[in-house]
Each structure stands twice: as structure tokens, then as C-alpha cells.
Amino acid sequence: MLFEITDTIGAPATAVLMGLALGAAFGILAERSAFCFRRSLVGEDRAQAAGVWLAALAAAIGLTQAAGAFGLVSFADHRLLAPDVPFAAVVIGGLLFGAGMVLARGCISRLTVLAATGNLRAAITVLSVALIAHATMKGVLSPLREVAGSVTVALGPYVSLAALPGGAALWTVLLCGGLGLIVLRSGARPSRIAMGVLIGALVPLAWLGTSYLAADPFEPVAAQTLSFTAPFADTLFWIVAASSIPAGFGVGLIGGTLAGSFLSAATGGRLALRSFSSAPETGRYLAGGSLMGFGGVLAGGCTIGAGLSGIAVLSVTAGLALAAIAAGAFATHAVLSSSVVPEVVPA
Image (tube, rainbow, N blue to C red):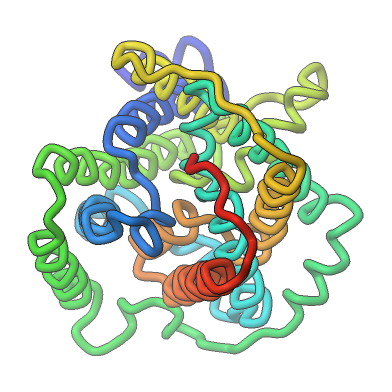
């Protein structure tokens, strides 16, 4: 069926449709399961939220590595498997992203889902993420990105866990087994764990679909998977220059996520307009979005792109990025909890 669609409309248009379909699935599952990395770290129900998120990570790792083992996809050119790791950029970017995630009460993927349900705080915040991310990749903030990216550590083949003793198979089993034990002890509802597993399965599905399109002899499309920081920047650029910039997989992914989240919330009676309650709250969310936009580009992705999808290819860089994001989140939460700054209304 994919071959017929590609043959009819071409690989680029097929990539957009694929992004729409996978994004819609992500939006529905994430909205219904309250999928959120921030909640798994500092939320009141952090143990249950972690169970859902780690179930997705285990599924992403296991299924992605299975696809690679059978030769269905190749990760050789993945940006997070580059032998020279931009250590400073990854650590600084991860810390900033984690701080922004706590300030805005959600990472960019969670805020995208919330924006579609009528949350105006989330909608405005994701726009700030997209604007700053684009400025960091191609605009006035790009010199800062280049300076941070110039500090590298050469890991060679050891940038992947697959290069360590035991190879990809052993590390896949160890990671999935360890994560599985945490999930079983998390207390999360089985239905939400199942939705987490399905979210994780979207990572290899995206790899498989876009890898097929990358092999198109006439209009090849770059193989890619789930991510939100760069796709949101691309979507913003496409919106303002659609006549000269074609849509791609990332634009479809963002559009599908918004549509899926909206439909899920609408059918569940969870649509509701929410806005800022004060000027300080507005400033906090915008600061959080700006930190996520800048930090996400430096770190090589968000909690989905560098976390869920990056760790699925056994990238050490991705693990470093996610650890830095977690550290930034914990530190910021501790500062806010000990200060006189009032908590904002939960997103």
C-alpha cells in the first residue's frame, strides 16, 4: 500500500501523510495517557507517570533494535551517533531544556498535546519554542550554537552502546529488562502502560516508513523518526513561507499530533479554554519555552527526539542529553520549591 501511495503522489508527499498518521496516533495516545517526561520526574504522580514513559522507552529500544537487527533500517548516519560528541552543547542544552520544561510545566511534546485541547498557555509557549529553535538553528542565535558545538569529545565507535562488549543485543536486553522491572513496580494503570508501549512503537514505525522513502530513486526523503524541536521550527517556517518551502515529515508530524490530540480530547469531553492568570505566569511560560527552544537545539533534540528516539538507537549522546535534561528539571524544581515564587495553575 505504501508503494502504491508513493508511486501516485511521490515520496515527499507520502512523507507528509506518514507524519500526519504517526502524529495523530501519538496525539491520541499521549493525550489519553497524559504522557509527560516532566511529570515522571517532578509530578505528584511521578512514579505512575514514569511507568508510562519508561514503557514507551523500553518498547522503542526493543522494537527499533529488532528492526535494525533484521536489516530493515540503518542508523549509521544518525546525528546522535556522530563519533565526535558536542559535549558542551549537549550538557548545556539539556540543562536549559530541563529548566524550561519545569518552568512551562511540560516539554514541547506535552505542550503540543495540551495546545490542541484549548490550553492557550501551552499554545503560546510552543510558538516561543519554535521561534527560538529556528533562531538557534538558522538565525541570530546560531553563532552561540556553533561556539557550544565546537567543544567536542571523540568517542569514536563507542558513541553507541552496540560497540561495547556484548554488542547491541546484550545492551538491548539489559535496558529493556531493567526498564520493564521499573514499569511493573511503578503502580501505573495497565491501560496507560499499554498506551506507553504503543507510543514507543511509533519510533521504529517512523524509521521503517521513512527508510523506505529514503530509498526512492527519484525523490528520496531523509530517514527520520519522532522528534518535536526541529519539526516545530520547520513547521513555523513552512507556515510563513509555504509557497517556497515544501512541507516534510516533521510538518506532518506536528499537524497530526495537534489533530489527534484535539480529536481525543473532544471525544473524551476534555476540551477547555485555559489561559494565563497573571503577568508573572506569562513570563514564566515564555521563559520556559525560550529555554526549551534554545536548549533543545543544542542538546540535539527534546525528550522525544534525543530521549525516546535517540536512546532507541543506543546512542550514548542521547543518554547524556536525557540525563542533562533530568538534572536541569530537578535543579529548577528544587529552586522553585524553596523560593517564594508561587506555583502556577497546573497545565
